[in-house]
Image 1 (tube, rainbow, N blue to C red):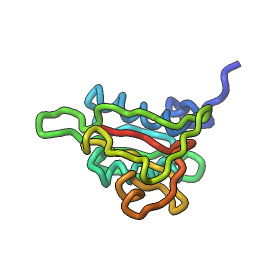
Image 2: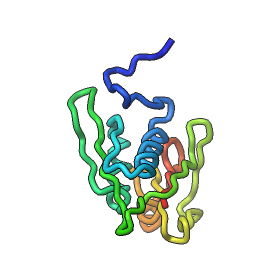
Image 3: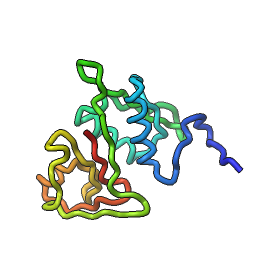
Image 4: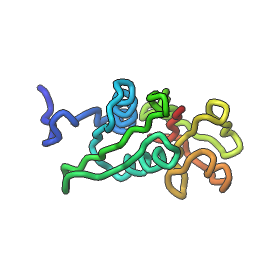
Length: 148
């Protein structure tokens, strides 16, 4: 029996791994040159989207709707040639496999042209800021998203 979408229409996605679902939605929207991607809202997704905006992969992050029907409207970034800024997304930690790293173990992503999002004791950080602050981090759950 199909589970109801809880009023999200076609926004109901993979609720077993909502972070992967969000990243795939962004990647797919970029591949077909859409201006925005809609994603069901959560605080953690909003934090990730804000980090992606800070790094230049998104142009805007807006919360739409109210109460339990909130969605994130994410403006996608494109280069001067019209090519999507986001080329590849790789999830290192998964619900079935947690990955943990010390700050010394994190290396530059894509020779400095990519970044990781990491869950730390001080909240979500990019791998550069976590390494700079020497924060021990858990690269688990949602945690290490690599973008290029």
